[in-house]
Image (cartoon, rainbow, N blue to C red):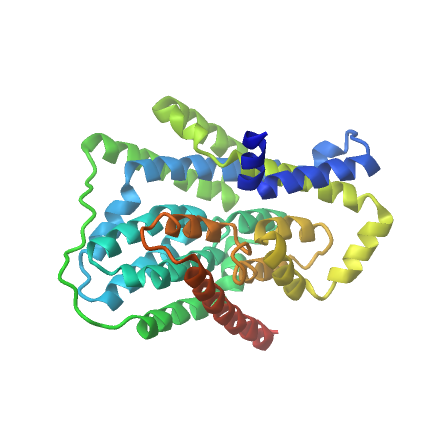
Length: 372
């Protein structure tokens, strides 16, 4: 029983999505239409990106790059700025959760080594905001973007153009936050990761980067998703099959269960019409609000079944990642890492997190209002 309770706590979103799917099946019994609910295109790309990023992370390539950049810093402000912008930039290509998994522990080690434990809360909170905001620029930045991009049929240029104003304002806001929240005093500790790549690791890194380019080409619809997926999985199986176990299969199953739930809800006329009328014309506000309660990935999947205004839904679920600690599940990754530090102050962290998130959310919603 303890094992079950622990699993439910760890994978609450997965369990809730399974429950919703099972309830919906009571109203719409399983039939041949079920297979059409599932977006195998999105699932295939997600799986490929997950195992590729797991491989690159295991080689330490991101830590090497981060260490090199941090080695050039000479003040608390510049140190914090580099750590925050690492999350912002890398999240665009390695997803927000991977960026946080890589760079938050790195930031904790660096700040402790430099005797800057008092900066931990501010740096980690800004890293989290940066990862969530940087990831919104590209279709591969986060799971909901990948799904909505595939569903919308938008071109890559159109997607980036849609999210570019919000990304630029976010970048300016992060620079301003770092300038305001950190003093410019010098630091004596030379920051370097101490990790270098061996010759064999460099070869593996090159292979993973080629596989990443293949995955991106499939997202851009240059090559077949399934052809790229077959190559990626086959190469990784031969090179290091352990990476196939590193994918977030709970997230993939969550997608499947939510696809089933949405598909069934659309086949119940009364519910489908009510949801469409409730969402129509209010995609931005509804998606931001829904994200605060169920997080932005489930919100994107659920709401996409009842509106054709996918650009508004893309923007809304990305901005909706700001706000509560569960608005973006990636935010919980940072919070868990902070919880492992010696002098953790969880209340202070949550207070700072909520305040800064609301400031960024308000600014971006104002931008959306003026763009309309």
